[in-house]
Length: 424
Image 1: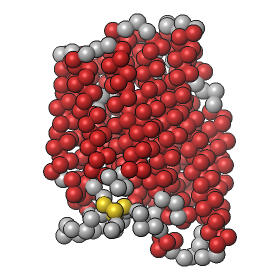
Image 2: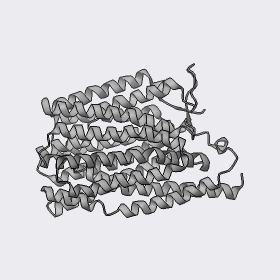
Image 3: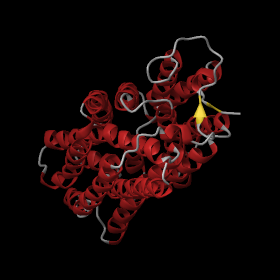
Image 4: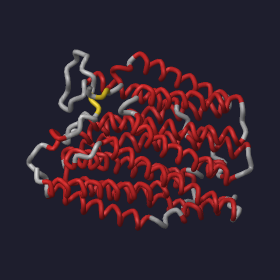
């Protein structure tokens, strides 16, 4: 390979990653800002917590389930990647300022569903773009997903943080103030599409200059591989089939017992009369997710078992903390634990799926994984919301705690099938 050509591919690859990471920063600023006040907004509208769990869970399910079909479509029509990304971001983001005009519960619910649908629409083609950049530009996938997740969650931190300033300084408390906050969050939308357009240009330069040599031969030996000790037949993309589905089941158990953060904020607003603190808690969770995902992407290569066990320990521990003590300090600690664990596990699963996939199947594989994860999150949110409404907050915490204990047991039983080891 010509050194100049190789350098240009690397340069264009990093420009795609940087611009898409900026896009994610701005997008998360917008929609995670809205989600940071969604639980409190539902309480102001006198919507029961069960319906919050239903809306939050079902909207997540919509966002995740659509990814399988979009992933399949992206694999069939590879040139449509950025077209779908544009459409996904438009639906994902425009729904937030439209909440200002929503004057009925049903319109609010529809916009919440639309926001998640748009997100689900854009993620498989975006992850597919990252996979192609990793392969063609010789950039390690853990670096791509680690940096992207860091920027993604920093946006999710800063958006709610700025909102908390308005809620504190301007005393935002009533329904109109919440509507105004949703409208303000739409300001950066044009910047999102500017950086998306730049990423599209640089990605086209990569595909136009695609070399005939197989760059995969030059990939560093630091990439993670499946430990070859099981005698199961491999499928077309290099996963051992039973390994892949065991990993999916593991992720589903975690998702089933994971408490949606708006439900936690619903309880917080009902217990403490500090609207701005609820938004701060969400910001803390998001920045913790950013740091957790980034650090885990670095250490997962050498210490995969420790990284997963540490994350699962946090998931098990935060319901215990809330069960025994319910003050503002504990809610801050819970926000840190909740965000770190989710950011770490999401990043790890993305790395695992991408490392042993082929370009023609990457969309479908990501889509299938996200669909099952989303289905489990939806059903789990329904149960959690129902238990909260019928039995109380503490019983919901016990249910979450029990499910996450099962996830730890499952991990120890199937650790070798779930984990991907380094080459010697």
